[in-house]
Length: 404
Image (cartoon, rainbow, N blue to C red):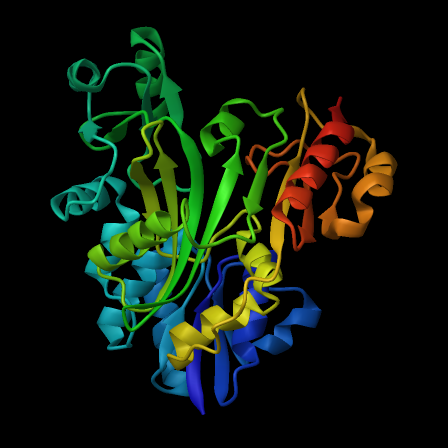
């Protein structure tokens, strides 16, 4: 019986899908490290859980793993899916001699400035960048790249706390808002313009086993800056040939350059007007924004099991045929406060309901989310990419979320 520790600070729905898949692996005793216990009906996934006060504390994670080691023996693997804990998990691996991604590799993925320095040295196209501690640094960088430019925390994720600044006044405000200083540098980047999407790569022993391209409509930053926009993510059924092969090759090259041997990477890419590609950033984790679920729907397989088989068993059960295009519409609206009403759902369902495979409508009374994923979503699937795109257009055109 192999002991596997799953670090899951909070029992989020998506996290628990991975937990369930890990618990179902033959010959695995699954242990958990959590800040918040899962629902009673989910606790059977774990043979034991070490509860910590702060799920993002490295010292508490060390103590929890040591406790579980004493009770259950040396773990064969320690895993987790959240981006902020990847460095912590790697540090635990090194302290206790557990196989898996090492700390240096995890740091290259997590620290976006270090990541881009490493990628540029490897000849991979990335946005020009600089760490800023004061306004003089910022204005010097602006003189090189011009406005607009992008500011974000060096270890940010999912476009959160990211600002597009168009001039000196906005730059001053963003630096102040991010608390820039010698002990808290801010990452400034050249603003990349063009078509934007992501590419998700599963590596096993450095070999790409599954590489999936997706499109964002519009960009994540545009969605973040305009919290009323109902945006979409599309996984086209087409996943090879012109417009796909160069993105996939770049994703594999980028993952390898940062040193990952086995696991998922989620890379943001930009295609400029001249057709050239650039890497926005890349994370060492399964994709969020329902993309993991969408990958499973596109290939008609279990993506959660695919990941745990890779990082626990070092096995891959594919390849699979990409049989469908899949898209997700993220639902939200103009205003602030709590959801007051959701209209147009019946009309949208009458028009495209046959293509909808999963949906969660915003619930009246719930506070407006500050995440770009919005307050609800609808996932559609069809063998034809054009049908999926049209269905998404119908959904975001008819469904209206209002707040009060």
